[in-house]
Length: 103
Image (tube, rainbow, N blue to C red; front, side):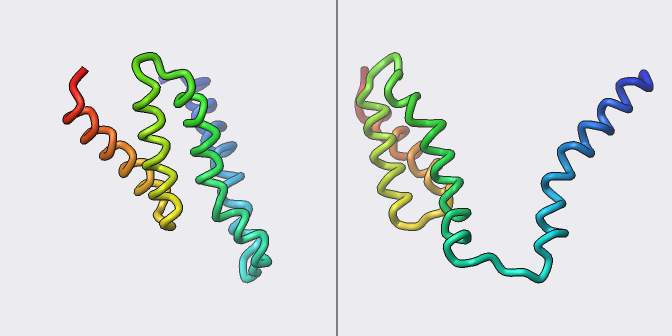
């Protein structure tokens, strides 16, 4: 392996690791205010919505798939489930829907 590639990989590892490690070091032993904790808890759902919502509107085959998947994800998210559970639940609902509704 070329030494330039090894240095690049090491540099990318450091640049990726630093932002993940710094909050643990800087906030060790400190507790964030409840308002900030509430905001940080909702970031995964906001990100998921921002990434998926355009896909719902611009679906190529049938917009009903997007609407049903979004409705399932919203209902599961309102129950307080984890983001992974929300995504897997929406996938499961759409799998069942596509199985019983032929083209």
